[in-house]
Length: 435
Image (tube, rainbow, N blue to C red; front, top):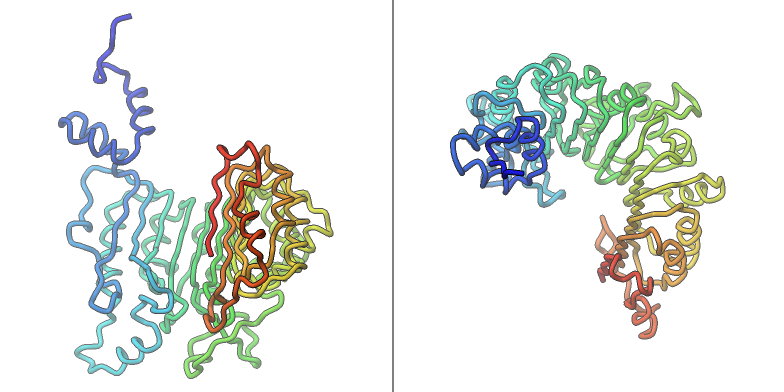
């Protein structure tokens, strides 16, 4: 058989090869000739990531001029606008409490909304795309959500309503009330939202409930649950309005079953599973309850992540006692906001024992209480497990005022925990320890 040059291959085979290449390889190939540049353009521009420019305070000002004009013709399917978010305690939103008040007090001639340049630049990029050409859109700027993009008449809602994936990193510190409406997005299979403001909870609830029947991935991160919002006792509305909390310095969450009742909509569909095809669930700083198990169809999940969620102990205990069949490939538990004791380890050991063939486990605990029981259960899954991360924290997260010393572990304990617990399977296991 005579050798065939790269250029002689059929177009469908060429496209298949291009789809298998990583981005650095695509860039190198695109520089080889005009022909290879044309060949790789589609793959190179299929996913676009555009960083925001920041001012001296580290807040996004807009996009770089060279990033606003997209090459023509291209048809990207994934677009991500992002900022380099490093410190969640210093929100990048220009409408955070202090910044917003100082901005409102400026002379009228200087009172232009500082978020306008970023919004206008983002709209300029979106206008260059064909209608419903995007499969995925990410707004990772750490700012509020502008109505010009996310409102009912926003450009994203009107021109890209067929999105299958929507990912948002906003700011709960934002003090600007805007009309956000995600009801046009009825085809989402993946939804991720971090740090929603009190004024966006209704939009979050709408997006989840409208797409519940086809959602495969759901990630909700409230960042700091205890300070998320404050419900006025006299209010009949489940969500807040600006004038109800403007003068409050601290916002406190209404605990209990708010997440299930209002965000997931269980109040309107009591005790009915709502997510028949959900496979990946990640909840951070969400108040869990027993009803979460039924509502989210936990037994059908392939990946479950629980990070710093209140009532996680009762949640896991209910899973064990109800004998919910769990066929998880990945399980992550970060519970570093309360000290652990023997009871926590015993419960976690029982939960791990109930899993069927996990491949990846990530466990984070506060304190250094001996966890031999947990590791003994992990050994039972040595044929399936590929990666284990066990993180021991000595600082209380979201507080930092207290620490826990390693007084519970003897020298022999440390040696035992550092030894490979899986015997001859070491070559297949990746483990990490953080102290």
